[in-house]
Image (cartoon, rainbow, N blue to C red; front, side, top):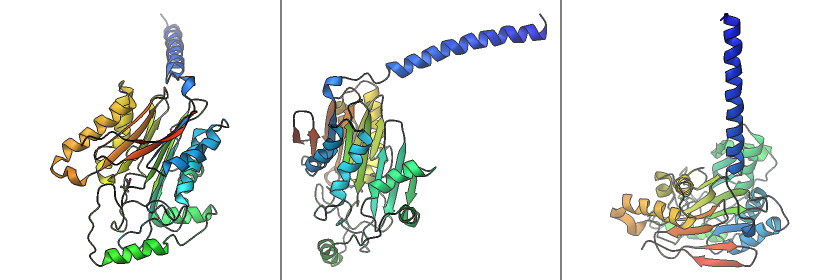
Length: 327
Ligand code: SD4
C-alpha cells in the first residue's frame, strides 16, 4: 500500500474513532447531572441570618433567574448589615484593628472568582464576581484586590463600626487569640442554590476569625475549601474554623463523596468525621460545618459541635434547621 493510501485509510479509521468519541462525549454531556424538576428551585445558607438571605435570593430564583445572581444578591444583604459581626460592613477586625474580608463565588460552568484580605469594600462578593467575569485570573488579594475594586467603581468605605471597634479594644486588654466554638466565629455566610434550570451556584463571604493575625486568610475565599460547585454533582459550602476546612480541602471533598453516590448529608458527615479523626487531640476547640445540595435537588448538612444551624428555602417554606452533629 502506498504511503498516501495508508495515510487515507488511517485517517478514515481515525475519523470513525473520533465520531464514536463524539457520540460518547455527547452522551456524557447529556447524561450528566440528571435533575428532579419537582425540587427546583432551592437555596441553602449557613446560620440564622440565612433566613433573610434566602428570601433575597428567592426573589431571583422564583422569577426564573440564575442561581449565580441569586447567591450574590442573597449574601450581599448580610454583607451590608452592620449588626452581623463576621461578614462585610461591621465585621470584627483583625488584631491590628483592620477589617479584612474574604469571599468567593462559583457558577454552574466552573467559573470562579475570589478575593482575600480585601479592605474598605462593603461587598467583597461582588468584587469576587468581577474577578470571575472581568479578569483572566481567579483570585486577587490585599492591595491588588482593593486596587481592582476601585478601578471597577466600588466605593472605598470605613467598615469598622463603633461596636466592632469597642470589642476589639476590649480584646486588646488580653490580646489572646482563642476562638470559641460557635461564638465570635460563627457568622460566615455560605449560600448554595439551584435555579429553575437545575443549575447550581454558590457564594461565601466573611470577615474571618475575629482578631486573627493581619493577612490571615481562611477557607471562605478558597475554591475547594470554603466553597465548591460541580453542576453534575452538587454544591457545597463551609463554616467554622477555616484552617481545618482548608486542611481537608473540605467542600471539594464533599462534592467528590457525593459523586461516589453519597447523599448530601452522608457526604457532609464523612468530611466532618475526617476533621474529627485528624484533630481528635483538640476536637473541643474545633467547629466545622458543611451544607450541600445535590444536582438531584436533595440537601443536607453536618457539623462537629451542636449549635450550627442553616436555612433552607423551598417552594413551600423558608426554615431554620439544626444541623446534625458528631458530638
Ligand atoms: C474562617 N470559616 O475565616 C471562616 C470563619 C467562619 O463561621 O466560617 N466562621 O475561617
